[in-house]
Length: 144
Image (tube, rainbow, N blue to C red; front, top):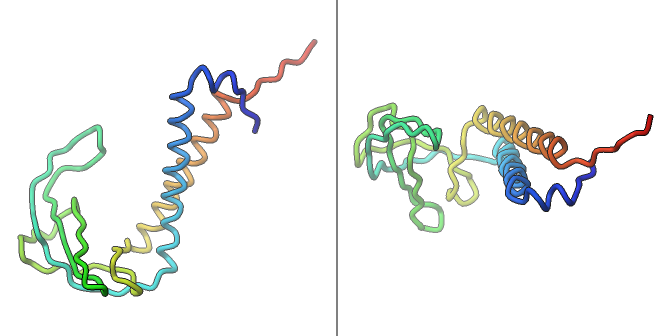
């Protein structure tokens, strides 16, 4: 795929947006490595619960949310927030999570979640490359 540098120069922000979409897609595709990570289940403590409001621009569904924290193998406190609270847990309750077995510092999504994120990454990469070719590709004119 050859790109036209003059088209890119005239539409820098659009090209940068498509490059950013490509990078986001690659980051999502890297979540497939969670399938091969060894995990262990540990208990995390709910530190905060709140009601989130639906926001169309962030694609963040509203409803009950929770923040959790746990202690990793190095003794450091790890936190993660904005997790759906379908169980109706309150502050101080324990919550079982899967973390990487090596350091227990990173929460690992389920196998299905990893595959879904990988597919979303592929879709983002393909769409950004197709749009780059469509908007910034070199067009060859043939004589008739």
